[in-house]
Image (cartoon, rainbow, N blue to C red; front, top):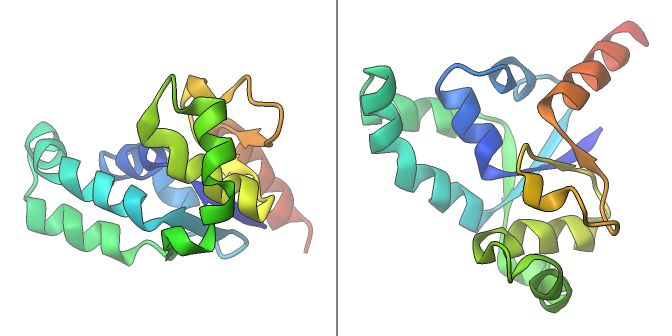
Length: 139
């Protein structure tokens, strides 16, 4: 199953959250924005300090995650709609929402800002865990 992945999922995984095992599930085809990867990389030094690891190690782990980072030209036709839907609450979420709108793929995020957007399907980590269990038993 294809999912668009928000920055908070990668950050959670890097500090040892439940998302870590899910990001490598072969049944999941993951997309994100190039901007999201930059956002995660910006926080790597703080995350490394928080979990007492090195920035180089966390960056290495992040780059192992099998996710395709989409450039803005791939979702530019949805940017204005995304801006209207979420730009007033969190301008940093405009790109990830635009990719979600453009692809019609569910968004995997634990960010409450996406909860009231009827134009998308939102999965929290718990939802993806359920989905992964279902996909693994469906063989």
